[in-house]
Length: 91
Image (cartoon, rainbow, N blue to C red):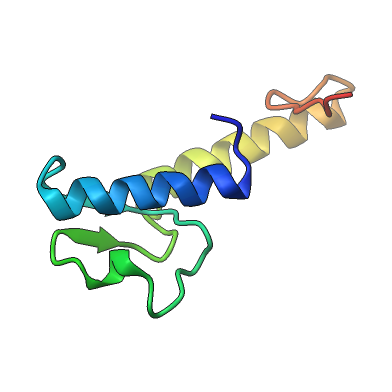
């Protein structure tokens, strides 16, 4: 829940356990922690895991949407408006 490295490692351990015991039948992962996984990582040894190289969203449709959104944000900024997808830093 807290997004720390320790928490993410614990989640990977729990996922491995669930996949190993059959609690979860299979998993397809686009993002791992750490990325890339070390060659000896237990998840890589499981037959019921598919790991993509952080490119699961690389399709024609998603690329088109991202480009359209980028253009809309650029036009907003050029017209003195805030970007549509502004991310404000937390204090």
